[in-house]
Length: 215
Image (cartoon, rainbow, N blue to C red; front, top):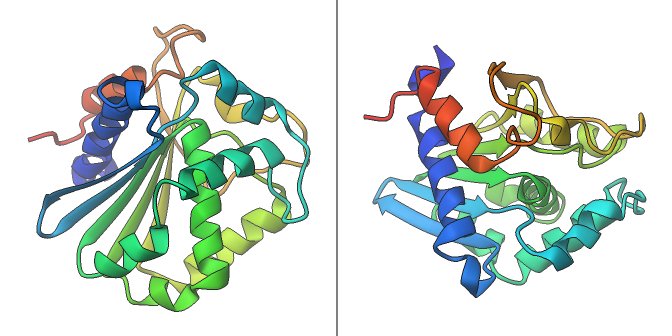
């Protein structure tokens, strides 16, 4: 089963929670964490401050076929971390890029930038799991095709898009021109309300509940 094999995806979600809680007073959007010599986590959090809501609402597609507001947030994340440098220095480890909500879109955008500008780096990676929790739709079909091209060229990279059953944010933007990458991994939870379904805590509890190996 996928869930039993991907305990790192569960732990990645807990590190996202750390960004919302422990680091939130510092206004940090990203976190790089090495849990051992063989494992590197690159973490992106989503909306946590009122001024960040402007990014969610700026839904116009830019010239790169990406949600304008999400791209603005991605550039703010880029000012915190040098993803090219991180991937280069961690190429011999198992890398998990774990991200939630607006941060999940930022994660995809920055990875797309690496693919377009530094594609050779991706070939050198031992393994990269891109783990998305409650990710909205980030761009149109042309943007998605670029990501699919990346996955076809680099078999060491995989994208896992977790969607909680009642999480309506994963349908946003509601315009038909926006699309998702890959198939959703649905976390079924009929008890959680629409209001609570998008929180990272809810993703953590459902990942743990649905047979993720957290030992």
